[in-house]
Image (cartoon, rainbow over all chains, first blue to last red; front, side, top):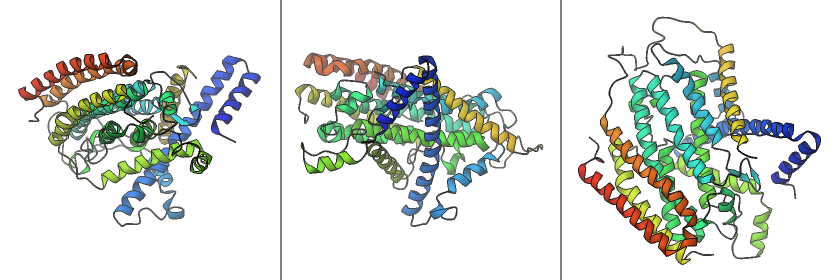
Length: 359
Length: 116
């Protein structure tokens, strides 16, 4: 059967036969770079469209419906508009930091893609500390945000950046604890090992209570880490205009916006990999007709389906919960989520050692 | 692919952002006037500098975060081997977490986690 894994292998073999190995490697890097840039552009278009359509349907509106069939090309039109807008640098900003910040945010959003498995056997870098890599790199993004906020020389930006920093570093802890639960159950930090361990059932089914608690905590934490509503007080429109990117306009603003949506995709992909088995299809029991039918659905469709379901859940949050105040936000993390996730970690350890999960 | 892919991705990110900004620089027609470069604060003229000393509350949270983040880093290698070692590992990590939790309770008691 045709698959992305075969395609990647064929290209790899053909390149190694035709060119010397150094050149083959360089060409592969170029291909990977182009593919990831393409993925970025597609994600930007699809996720912004999805956000607007989900919002409008939840409010019984039509949403964008003029450009293209059903408003499909609205984002393309918006991108074209942003290209012809001037990306100005206001007086009194720290010019270097102000211009470097969008690059920093974009680099982090792109590098974080490396250990993710997009389909069966389709992975850029099978690093043995994949989960740690993702947590570590994603926490660097706070530097880009603080850079942007501080360099803007604007009170809204500074406040937004500070809030965002406090929020991201706080919720990173409980996200880390939630990830650790899966690491304990699997016994490996390598993403491919974690996915392979779920071949006979996803962790959300196999791991029962500790994994359910970890999943809920993980979803809350990543919603806060990506500055989404109800934790969007870093860019609360009604109080801070746009938070840390108030002063950005034109293409630099578009880059921040894109990086934000790509980060949502990355955390949801991580959630799908850890809790829902990545590209593993849904199986019940062994060797039934149902399993065979599920095997026919390509692995990339499974992965994207799970990821986009989680993205939908995060968008759902936005129209369900009211925005928190900063003290409530920090209370929720430090007084509830952190102690709960610490005890959940111990519970998961007991269950992992005693073997009380389904195997 | 090895660690070289990270460099490839970084170059891809820089190229993507750089080309996007460059295209918009080429396409646009820029004009300047006196008001244009002012900080955007909803139409009012800016009062005082923006680079000021900031609420110490954020600093306290950052300090506590640092302790717990280092703790988390210590937990990662432990989490990989815990299934192989067994109950001893659980006891050890409980002692470790207990000490940290006491510190957490102390910070809580001192009011470091209260937002003023």
